[in-house]
Length: 125
Image 1: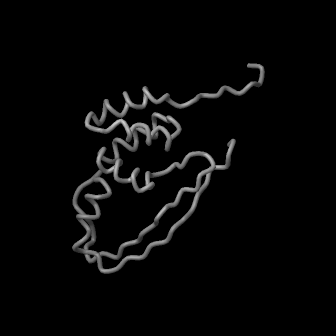
Image 2: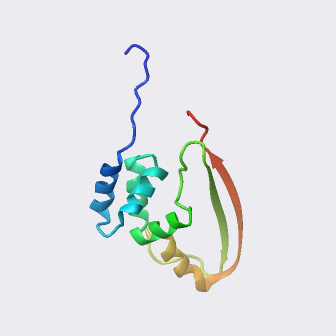
Image 3: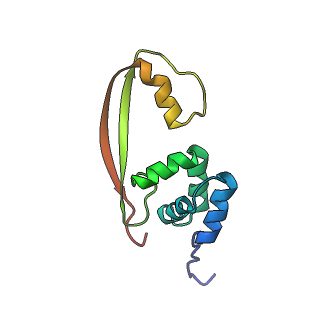
């Protein structure tokens, strides 16, 4: 190579619509468009979000501007870190969603605290 960088762009809009539709056929086109914008077409990130959350969960997060990381270049992304004190030693299940985990621990929460962290990918990095 002559020292020139190779730039790989993310998937275009139609490819993201197809990808989202393959895993979440009931997902609205608007969700696919929002995921493409949020993850600059990165198929690994989009797939990860679709495997971690249902289409309705993602649509609700997108509507609130709270899609999980990473944020697009130059935009600040907020991380909410919450620590829960529980009266139970463990919870049942493995590989459960956030919503299922919260439902599982809810009866056992005796205290909680949160802090917000901010992260931004510099432009052009």
